[in-house]
Figure 1: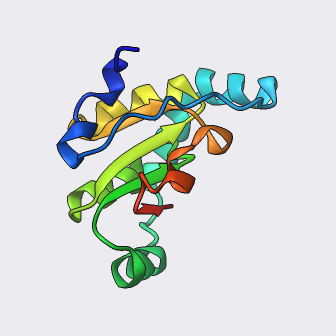
Figure 2: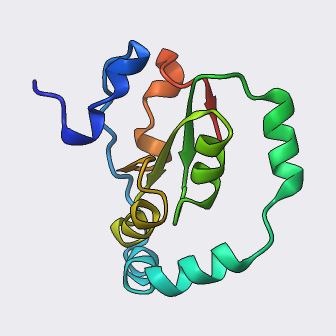
Length: 129
């Protein structure tokens, strides 16, 4: 099996890729996120950063690959990457992932969800947000 395009670079961390499956999700909700991704992202990125969450991450997260499950437009994934974490944003909404990739071009974003994050059990991810 060939590595999918999004998996390139995981070997930089000595890891094999994990194919993420898209969980079943309420179609209306997913369509709303996809269709209104730009507006949702604009609103989310205008809000103050979650400094309480950031402090907890600084205190308890260990260096290594960190999955941001439900990353949306990538605000927290971008913050993780800026703060030295090998961050991977995971979200079922392709519209929000497009926003995330546009806003954080150096960060990896993949389509998936909680049900498909098989790397947690296998030790691929050091931390998950």
